[in-house]
Amino acid sequence: EPEVTQTPSHQVTQMGQEVILRCVPISNHLYFYWYRQILGQKVEFLVSFYNNEISEKSEIFDDQFSVERPDGSNFTLKIRSTKLEDSAMYFCASCAGLAGGAGGELFFGEGSRLTVL
Amino acid sequence: AQSVTQLGSHVSVSEGALVLLRCNYSSSVPPYLFWYVQYPNQGLQLLLKYTTGATLVKGINGFEAEFKKSETSFHLTKPSAHMSDAAEYFCAVSARNEKLTFGTGTRLTIIP
Image 1 (cartoon, chains in turn yellow, cyan):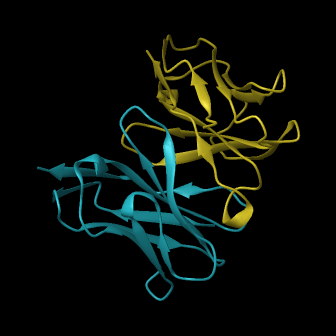
Image 2 (image 1 turned 60 degrees about the vertical axis):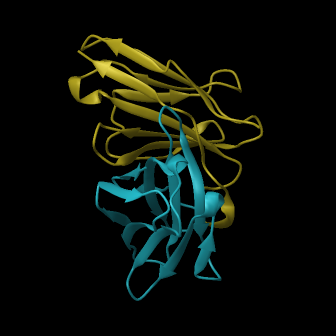
């Protein structure tokens, strides 16, 4: 069964370092998302990506964050200079159609846990 | 804008007992509602969703949920809990073709 895969499963980094989280969405999906979950808090939307550009982003997704789909298969989230408050579980998701409603189901990866020291 | 409130961050039920996980939503437009489950060390998996039509929705693993517009609720139920149901459950809402907004989750523990 097709699945969304994420690497690494856990990354520990020092504050101020750059981090890249990688995702391989399901191959025929067109819409890609990053969500994050700070420990004990809700799953929060970060960004959506379609047709090689950001379609929507939240207020969390500031200039420290960027996404790209460099090779048609990987979908990456980069955090340029990590802060302590970036420690969270980051989930990648993909969807064949527009998320929500009858447009399509979001398929989530297992998450990448980022710990910033 | 949409929001979701899940009442009870932790719920414990005995094996074989009724499971009831509560979700209330707020939406300025007709909502689309979802329940996702996260088993330990796994990603989020869709349990069921309501878009339009029948308000009682059946999902995987014997779960169902009922959309009640008058109560702005979408509670998740299962008649008889199984040990394998132990997981974190997330309610989510969206407007048509928009991003999902999640609740804070409810951790379900099954007591043998």
